[in-house]
Length: 155
Image (cartoon, rainbow, N blue to C red; front, side, top):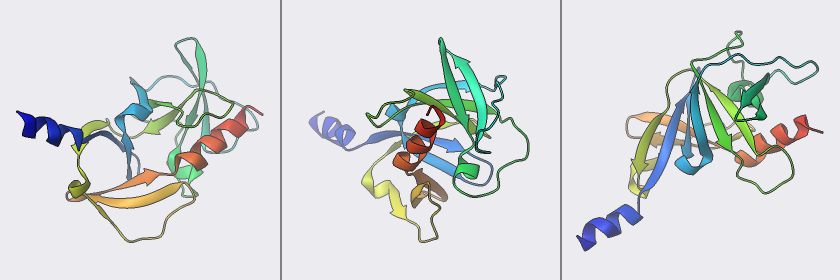
């Protein structure tokens, strides 16, 4: 029993979020809720990566297309399969939540340090590292870049 408890302490619950051309890997605590796609209120004069605002639990939450924020072309359409409402990781002033547009259903994975291996490659401005996750690759986003961009929307 003690060996099992020690092993669980070394595991991290993560969420894999499928995007158009890649997938994101984030700790589970970053995710507030996963929603089916909903109508988004379009905003004028926002960057192309901001799809608009989502009404969620009495808050207006900006919806972000990660690929476009990262400098890559995203899908031309302004929708996705679902939305992943994110808890902000930083203690800066601004919106406490934002949402990521996902192209597939996110899935929960339990990871240990041995489950991940760095994958060489060129990183975009909103990417921290690309990792090999079993037979797949995933991007760990740079939450500082992502959340700073979202915070600029409210200024």
